[in-house]
Length: 77
Image (tube, rainbow, N blue to C red):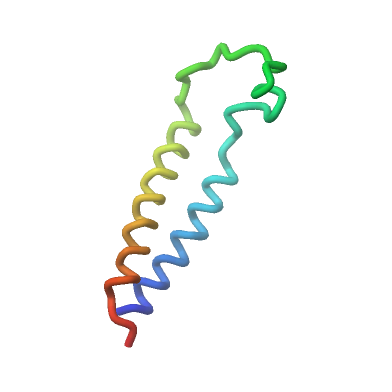
């Protein structure tokens, strides 16, 4: 049972990494932090694929956390 949970954990880890890398950044970097970047007209717009990737990241993150807990509970045999 441990190895099944471990396999699912590894698959989920790879999927989370891929989904995070597919997302576009919300800010331009350090320039926005220091006040250099203007704009900001798209606050709250999470439509299209950006919203789907965001939701998928949340779900995969929750599954990843539950699998990490399961790895501690399931005995290694």
